[in-house]
Length: 174
Image (cartoon, rainbow, N blue to C red):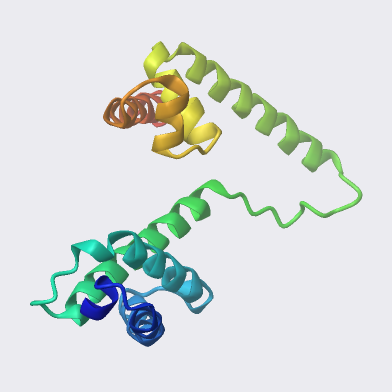
């Protein structure tokens, strides 16, 4: 990596290629499922490219790479967890002949959706904006910040407060 930092392109290509197996091992140690390993490898290599100037040649490259790979693995697991909580899995979604139970369920879903929309509308403007940008439109903090003109920290605080208020409204949690 020291040679790569000095501008040796071949050394840089070699260090990246040689890093793949270590990244995979770090991701597996974190519990990343097999189908996400390639994503973790790609994200780690992108991160290494972005922060390669921070590598200190007097220290272990393997430890530096391992720390980055572990962080990207945790990020992948968190992302997978968020998707799993958001996605609905309905075994009847592909039924072509809805019956009365499906109509009742659809009506209940519509009522719940209306309650949620009303609850979001009742939030203070900053919290509502954070929920809409980060939660509903699934924008990154950077994108939401650029669109709203708010600091990323303010968006995070507003989202946290909004989620706490919504949980309290629907589940009685605080």
